[in-house]
Length: 484
Image (tube, rainbow, N blue to C red; front, side, top):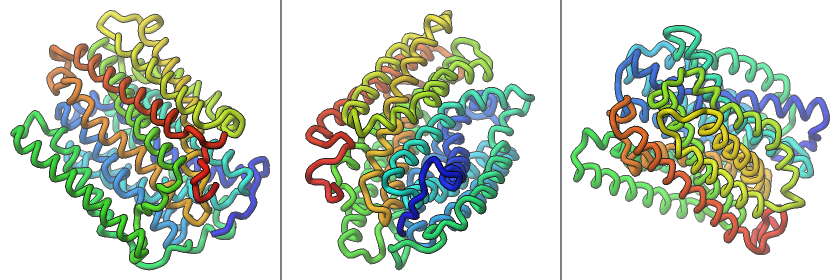
C-alpha cells in the first residue's frame, strides 16, 4: 500500500485525519469514560470490586488480544473496509451496553465492544501511515496520538457529566457512542473512500492467524481473570490458572515466531518487527505509561467518590487539567522529537508522571482539592503530554507503510494489554478489596499502596527509555534498525 503524499495543511489531509480520529476516539473514550460510572453501575445493577474490574477489563481483554488480528485483517482485506466494520460492531455493542439489564449482559457486551475497537483502532492509524507523505507522516501520527489521548483523558469528565444527567445516566456513557460513530462513518466515506490504497488489501495475503488470536485471548484471560476473582477463588486454583495463562502466552509467542519465519499463515504478531530497537523500547515504555494511566485514573476516580464524597461530576472534573495539558501541548511535543530526541522526552515524561502519581498517593479523607489533588493531576498531565506523541511516533514512524498495520496493531495491543493487566494486578498488589472499594476500612491505605506501585512502574519505564534508546538518533532510530 503506497502512500498518497497527503500533506497535513491541506483540506484533504485534515479530512483524512478527522475521519480516523473521530472513530478511534470513541474506542479510546470507552477505556476511561466508564471509570466514574462504576459506583453508579454498582448501585443500579449490583456487584462489587470484581464486577467493576470486569466491566473495565472485559473491554480491554478483547481489545488488547485482538487488536493484533485487527491490524493483520486490515492488511489482508483492506484497511478502510475493516475500519468501518469495526465502527458498526462497536456501536451495536455500545447500544447493548446501554440497555444491559444485568452485570453479566453488560460485561459480555463490553467484550463485544472490544472486538469492534480491535478492528477500528489499528486500521485508523495504518490509514494515516499509508495516506500521508513520509515527511508529514510523523506529524499526522503525532496529531492522532495527541487527540485520541486527549479524548481518553477527557473520559472521566464526559462520564461524570453523563452520569449526573439522570438517575440512569451511566447508560448514556455507552449510548453517546451512537452519534459519534455515525459522524465517523460519514467522515470515513468522504475523507478516506477516494484515497488510493485504502480500499484494497495490503501485501499480506492468505489465511488469518486464528490460532494466534485464540491463544492471546485465552492466555490473557487466564492471567488476569483469577486475580479479579481472587476473593472468591481458592489460592491454589488462582496460582494454577495464572501459571496456565503464562504457559498459553508462551505458546502464543512460539507460534508467532514460527509463523513469522514461514509467513503461512501471516502472523498477527510479526516478531521480526522487534528487530527495530526503537519500536521495542517504545512498546516497553507504552506498557508502563498506559498501565499507569488506566489503573491510576480508575483508582483516583473511585477514591474521590467513595473516600472523599465527590459526586461523579466532581470526580470527572478533577482530572480536567490532564485533558487541557494534553490538548495544549502534546502535538507541540511531537514536533520536538526530531530536534530534542525521543530518548529525553520519554525519560523525562515517565519521571514526571511518576512524581504526579506520588503526589496523588497522599490523598486521604479531608484532603483539599486545590492543595491535595490538583498539584498531582497537573504534574501527571504535564508528564503525559511529554510522552504520548513521541512514544507513538517512535513505535510506528520507523517501519514501512506495508507493515504499518502490524506495527500499529502491536503498539495499540501493548497499550490495551497494559491497562488490562494493571487493572487486575495493581489493586491486588496494593491490598485493595471489594469491601474497601465499597467504602469499608482499608480504602485509603490500599489506594496509597497501589499508587506507589504505579509510580514504581513509571520509574521503570523511564529507565527503559533512557538506557534502551542510548545511541539512537534524535528520532529514535538505532544504527542496527533495518529501516534506519
